[in-house]
Image (cartoon, rainbow, N blue to C red; front, side, top):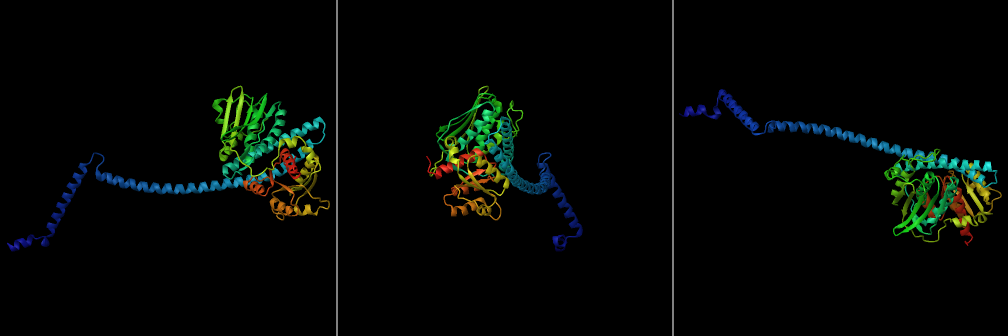
Length: 454
């Protein structure tokens, strides 16, 4: 018995027994796998599902790697596009500055010619030249504005100022343009103080006025204000054909223009109201449009009220239209601009207003002038030569020796920082191409303030 048990003990199993046991275990495993497989639904057996899940996981991993690589390439492409956009904006800014210099000089010469007594035919030609230059200025300004808005580099310079400081100038300027088209412009002034970026807000109202004149065949244009609890509503209305309701949203999109413009020669790009919409959004100024077909349209922008710390040096239409010319007669003005053509143009324009003018392309040349007499006003370009620095530095040096000297900085650079720095120092700031009417009003205001006002 003992020998029999020993021969069948597991530790002494023969090779044949092990083979049989292995075969038996395989049969058991196969039976278990068959049972597991048969326990699932047809076409979705757990083991097959497991294999399928493993395959899917591998595919997900591979596609995730591809997606991550694609995203990295997209990020690189986006960074490259943004860099190209900034480069384009800088290029446009640089080109626009170079273009604005001769354009500014041409506007000055044309305005100086208008002050001369000319034969009627010559006066008409000068008027055509002036309007053509304004068209070029408008197109160039539109291109620069849209590029700066796209690049996100247009920062507003928000400050309080009297509404009349903006609207008085626009009313006088566009009254002449309306008259040339056989239209009348009715202006209702306001003494309210508002808070905004003067240059950008001017861009908005200018577009309103330009469109009103462009699309109004006959009748009148209205420029005025309504006092609202939340701010001053600046309104531009017309007696034109009106705007169909279906087009009232589309006209604020880029390259969209209202059908039926009567001006075949108009060279607009259809970007005016698109820029208005984006500027108003950036400033937080709500826009409003009311129109009836056959009865005209009314555009408006709502601007918050502001508060001035002291009496502003802003110009007024009254001082320009009544006695403004007398105030300029004999006024002593220094002009510093590193462009000789602009110096000559400024001399021609200011002299036609009765001013005594001394121009120079640098501070050293101004100080070296043998007939130099003390001035009441300095008109200085912001971008001067390396030896002088910028116009603010030059003005500061001259103000050390002439504390009563009034300063106006003139620049083709529309950056908010330059306007803010000029304002902090108590200087005026005008943008190129220089608008002669705004320059005249600025000079009248500064001289009136220096003389104690009336």
